[in-house]
Amino acid sequence: RVLPQDRATRVEVASLSAQRSGRRIALVQPASVTLEDGTATIAGLVVAAETGRITLSGQVGERLALDLGVRTLPLSALDILRPGLGLSGTLDGEATLSGSTAAPRGPFRLTLARGAAPATRSAGLAPIDATLRGELAGESATIEGDLRAGAPVQLRATGRVPLDSAGLAPL
Image (cartoon, rainbow, N blue to C red; front, side, top):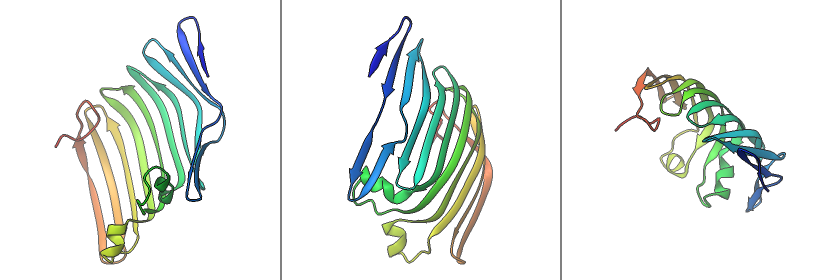
């Protein structure tokens, strides 16, 4: 429901779910988004996707104060949104963002356990384990990553990546 207030608009979501082929994504608890002076304040957003959870809270506007968490998210749950994707494995991660939306700052971590896709399976690759850690620092990000797909495939990368105003490395 939408609740107009003096200088703000509050959107409350009591429930939300999607199901397909026995898989389910659902809001765990009521959540709200308050819009005021170009800033969205997100409170209580917790989504369960099969056995995993995604959490998001904080503020997004000219300035960021945002916490994102991903816990044991099965990639197979993405088939709800895109049938036939065929991904497997689990994803864990977290990010704490601050600064401006044009130059975000903060640490992040993403871990993939036993990840596989139809193309990796057909190529005979072992399931992929990967970790990416880093720190957003405005116009760049420092990264450290490891990737393993069985004994024959082991990669390690470290460095600094430039970011454009959308937060992406320019190509």
